[in-house]
Length: 254
View 1 (spheres, rainbow, N blue to C red):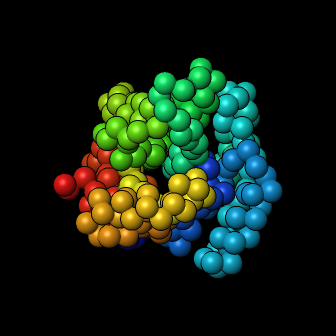
View 2: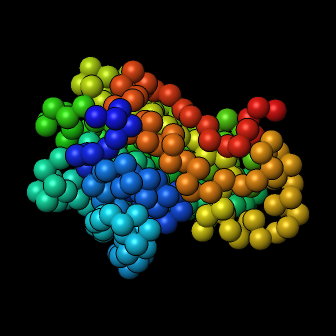
């Protein structure tokens, strides 16, 4: 079998109804995986499921999940197990951002970003790792880092803090779970045209300034992440763990 094949694998993609998660879902289905899209918005999930199936001529499944509830996470894992009998791959792609000057940040703003971008990413990792260990599955976990894991951008203090935390969390979990055969890695996108970045990138000056920082002189598209995601989800990455792959068009070169 091709080492990059995902044939026979079951992949859960958190935040798979849009943006980068949806792009990864399409790539995984083409590689042969059974893909479960999960988010809080079941209408978005169902719409994306149809769009993905039409684009890939494959099939995927939509399951509602509120990742801010540990009880919901536990119930979700049990439901996936009951219906699919395995979870081989987890991709954490859910995310929010609040753009404000640091001096204007309120406690609720900080908590909102940190909870979605870091706190519940950990608890999703934990729940899936517990499942994999109990089933003796040598699984793959992929967290979503960012350029802001290493760069400090204005008006993004909580986001930068959370994404920096993702990198360190990924390393710590990779170290701890290596003995169980679980690989934990992260993908760090640059700037991509998604629903979350669209309001920012509609400003032509912002867009042009951003592109000047990218040697390839273009924004990323969700499909640009598929190669890195396939590597980290497949047997081709058996000896890769605790790593971050920056998929940024070369931004960090300079």
